[in-house]
Length: 290
Image 1 (cartoon, helix red, strand yellow):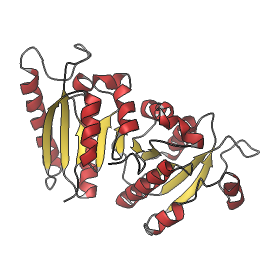
Image 2 (cartoon, rainbow, N blue to C red; image 1 turned 180 degrees about the vertical axis):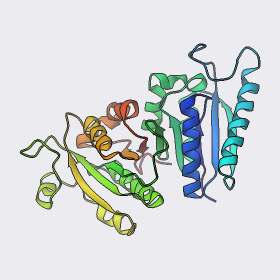
Image 3 (spheres, rainbow, N blue to C red; image 1 turned 90 degrees about the vertical axis):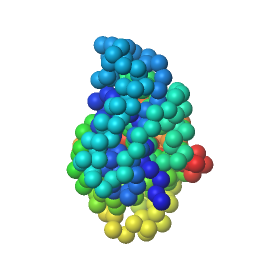
Image 4 (tube, one colour; image 1 turned 120 degrees about the horizontal axis):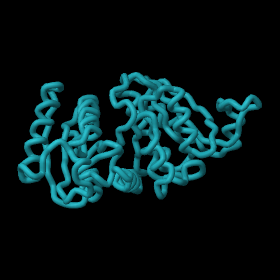
């Protein structure tokens, strides 16, 4: 049996987007959908609250009712999908990271409230991105882009970017979408435009594209290409490139080297989580995965 797709839910609008995104992913992957809420004292109370009244009902009862309602909505839209809900006690980030050990994908909204209020400052999203044991998607931008929109994956030759490339090839196959392997470089063409990769130039930047040929051989139906992208930082380059391409998903490793070193402590991933024009998938390396 396939591991489930797990979605962190708190009742906010972004969490609802995450649930519907997760449902589509579970449908593509042939897995179940599990909607999870971490019950704890909310960091921010009304007027910044989830759409349930903590004063009229017990918080636990109210959230159980809301989880059941959302699960029913998803089930009506995806009749063949198995949907379950869980309400767990504990810190949000710990609950989600622990849940990721038994998931094929973890999905959260980029901002939340209630049990996920820390997402307002990005701390939970950053912790999930840095410590998840399975690929994690932070839903932002347009979460209902057509499946066939291009997928962009950041590459730098590290084991983390290899894991990201494997996940990106899988997503491209599931969506029948084009895949672009993008490497950040400060180098620009004479006209100042983005430079397109050529074999001699790739040779000068080491193994950034190495290891992808054997991965691509496992996905013969996936159309892919490599690009060198320029910008003041890896995050800025990836965001600008993804926006110009109208990408449907941006994929990065949770730890990187070279242009993506910032992912180690979340500087690049934090920027992408806060500002990317589309959903962002963060993939742990084989060492960090379960």
